[in-house]
Amino acid sequence: MSVKATNIKSKLRFINYVVNKVEFYMNPKFTGDAVSLDFDIEREIKFLEDEDNTVLVKLEADIFPLAEYKNYPFSMKLEITGVFEIENNATEVEARGLAETNAIAILFPYLRAMVTTYSANANVEPIIIPPINVLKMVNDKKEV
Image 1 (spheres, rainbow, N blue to C red):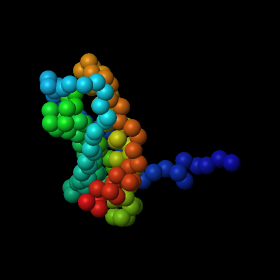
Image 2: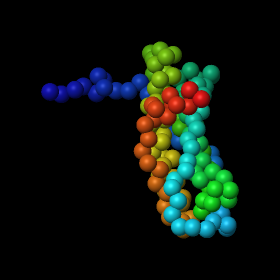
Image 3: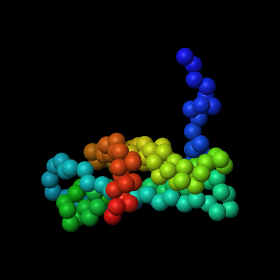
Image 4: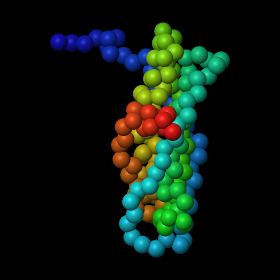
């Protein structure tokens, strides 16, 4: 059985992403060996008013926050913004759902790869953020 691409094509299209910020600070007071990964991910969604089918999705990662206080080897903050287009025939509810789940799920692997690459190039043990349930993350952040 063949499926036509038009039947499964998403109303969301990933255009590009940009790196807004990368901050990396070694903790000279770190004592110890391995530590468990401590991170937080925040997101911001902005529908552009002058371009009603364009949405910007910003992800911010905070890796090992408060490194000196919690005795982490370093701290890292990253921020990336993805540019997406949503088809004009999508409803407002549909567009919001696509941005909150699908767009974040598309953008998250880029953030994960940056954390791993940057930490490896900083000559520390490479950090690998595990895959996450994007829908759960979004719902959990809404409840707070």
